[in-house]
Image (cartoon, rainbow, N blue to C red; front, side, top):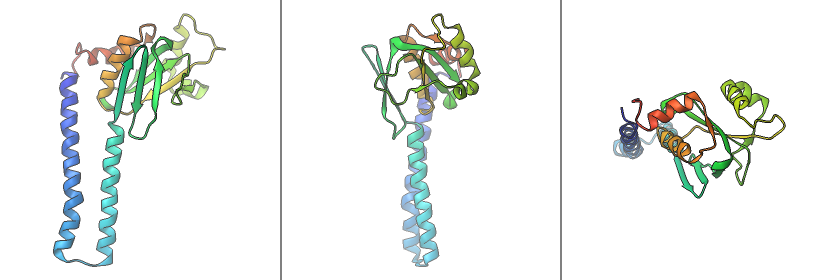
Length: 195
């Protein structure tokens, strides 16, 4: 299936989920009111269910929220509902790697500079143990230096919209090295491989 059709289906599915949650959010208190039940147990139970509905909607909004903008060699990414805006300079991106596929995909961006970006964290041994392919690819970088500080950012949220972000990164971060897993996901984003 084409990635644009998959994104459209994902948005329709989200709309159905939100409509169902709104119906439940309005329908449950209305049914309790119309039946005339005034027991404390039912009212507390209803309150807990209403809070769980709100939490589920906020969780879905947070997971599928991804906004990005490219302008003059700067990529602004807002990943999640409550996340800060992160700025990535495309010339400073060294390596791009992806883990997993489809909506569970994680985009790992490795840069040499942390410029006004709290989301970029320095690479430590724990990160390299968790992602051994990144360590192998970093060694292949022509000007890789163990003493130099490298920073990483992982983009986990956004659903299938991450494929469009990955394509934007591929178009604009021309100096970066892309791993084989990343290239496979870029092919999916460009429609060369169907999901």
